[in-house]
Length: 251
Image (cartoon, rainbow, N blue to C red):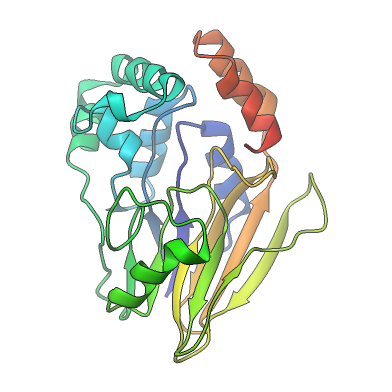
């Protein structure tokens, strides 16, 4: 099965469309959460995402926007964006967000693979370092876990003696690129496809991944998108300017 993995779109329609245009052929799409928040196209992104399939996990911004999480847990800019998003969403889209499932979720045809937002241990966990990855990679039964939340593209791999991290190495700053990461039998993995709408690894390009379960290869993608259009939407919505300027920095 060929799986297209999208995460942390954060209402960035331009980035989502660029990813879909660049995506290889796929059989199923899995969305790892944080569909909304930060950027200025929440209804459009939800409509486009829902048209892609049925496999979704709720993210913390999705929960916050629909009232399932206290905004006191957010920084002031994120909270303002969540409140603005709540006011913009149609009643149908708000109810749809509220009904999104908590991970982990599985797909029947994909044995040994699970999907979460933060980690298998806690949906709000940030798995950034090797130390962060130790518990979730060891306690979960699934050999492969796809996760989001950190906006950092890459993976963690563990065998009986070592746990290592991997970050894709790209050669350009403005072109479409891919980086293949073969999964080895007998190892356990946490894999983050990266953020579609707000990367935080210093690379402004939109990030996503594809997984081929037959070959066991994860292909990481980075694609440029219409950054100015996404920024202009944020300015026009009178959202905090920081939400627009940070997109150019990939932070």
